[in-house]
Image (cartoon, rainbow, N blue to C red):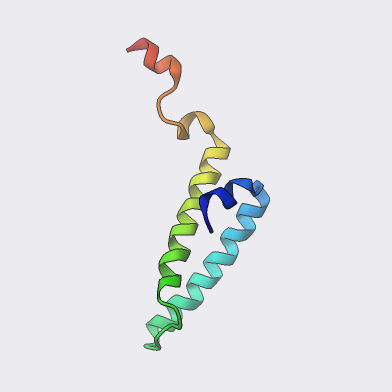
Length: 78
């Protein structure tokens, strides 16, 4: 999924999507481990990237001050 699509989702929907992607990734990784060739190898990479994007968005929603980098107050003190 694209980041724009993920930003429109709520926190509960993001967590649900995250569990779906983890299950899908485990299934695909098991397929690779057994030696069978996945139908779409790029799907693994896309799932990993989407999981990372969701983790980033959840972290931003949990604490926007920490995830946004240096705050304006901290920059003023320098």
